[in-house]
Length: 319
Picture 1: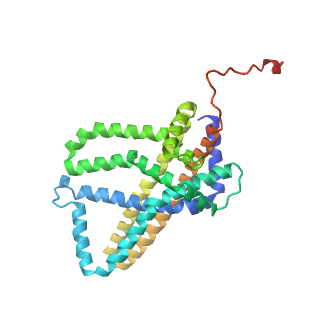
Picture 2: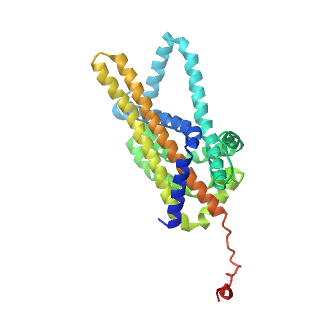
């Protein structure tokens, strides 16, 4: 790792530790939502596989859920409206909040980096100003995410069988490589959108140019990708740990004929683990955003040298 990269990462970590309110107000809630959705996603993929034709099941998992939901609501109709409202509200927050918070985080980091006085409530204004283009960009690149690759792989295996998955594996591998390539080229897109107030397509083009013209920073990009991967791995570990711990507690207490205590203890443990997972994820997210923001501000402050320009002859000044 170069000295410049180490300094950038060190400064970013110090900045993150000195601005924990940024984690609390603009990163924690999106991290909670992403962790909960991650748990639901993993649970859905697992149960869909277990209840798929691959294991001799006649009814798919979604069919079983639909039948049980119809049976439940036929005897508990009063829960329909509250549950629908809750699902809609959570869904809206999950879809909209990350883009809003991302714009606020980047803008506040950049302004604090440049010595401007920024208050936490200013993040609301910054998030709203950049919300629409960040939201548009997030859905544009979501198609090339690693989650999309695994989703398609699981869909093919469950519905068409292992032979179909093997057939499409080369396509999925190419799709995965293209996704990584796109992720690297689009590294600075959000920062052009938020800091320089550029349009999405223009920001994508400028980000690609910035990455290509600063190849010496490739090592830093790789390191940052590893940091993001660590964040994802942490989420996966907790995604698997939370429901597993809750089910184990319920089983142990239920076997002792005290089911109510089982649900209380399991729920408490689940909430504690959810808090830990979300806080770690939020901290790493702000840290990674800080590293990228510092790097973006530094790279964009450099002037590109034209091929027509000649180096200055400073030999006279050195005599």
